[in-house]
Length: 112
Image (tube, rainbow, N blue to C red; front, top):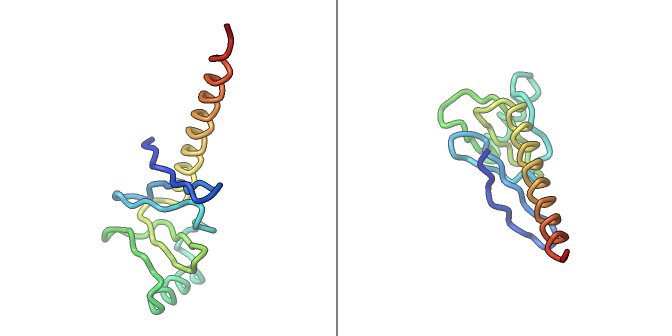
């Protein structure tokens, strides 16, 4: 998986993940990734559109996932919620592996 750049904001890192068609999001800003099929979620989408808080990242495709940001913005994505979750988890595993390799190299370099 392609790892996107991390931006340091103080002590916290912003992790970016692909949501399809070259669109990426900051994982730390989103509180939910849900399926758009239920009536309450469709109502949330409609209300966000009316308020100008809807971001449609589907590129004309059917929305497969609805992401709710901490700012109140709603993002529509053409990929399944499970796919987004898998990409986030995969990205986290890559980061942990790189961090462990870096720590091992740092400890191994001092041995004579």
